[in-house]
Amino acid sequence: MRHFFGIEDEEFIRGDVPMTKREIRMAVLNEARVQEESYVLDVGAGTGSISIEAALGAPQGHVYAIERFAKGIELIKANMTKFGVNNLTVIEAKAPEGME
Figure 1 (cartoon, one colour):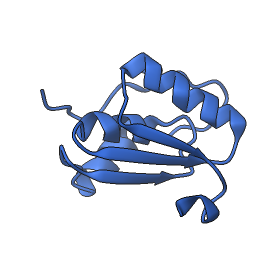
Figure 2: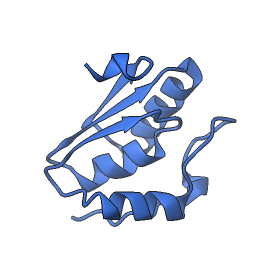
Figure 3: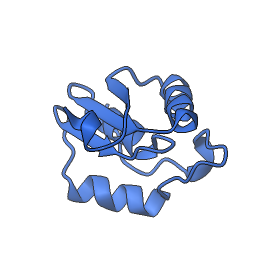
Figure 4: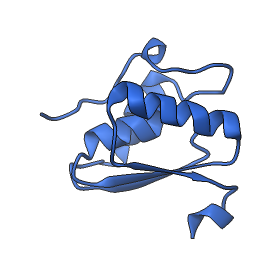
């Protein structure tokens, strides 16, 4: 089943880490033309809202989320569990070093 971008902001586990708002996520992911087999790199992933939506939109692809802060890493992993995402790799690093 195809995922349509636009999960409500309140659905994400967030804490006090900045998050890309729903309208921006929708515009970015639609403009990026994320397809079922896409590979996506989310640099500075924060809570993982873009990463989660991209992973749901690319079930046969893969998403790489680069985040340097431990609090963000924890939130991304919590959101992966909440949304049942398993095609996402979290990379704890500062960009551009983590992009290798």
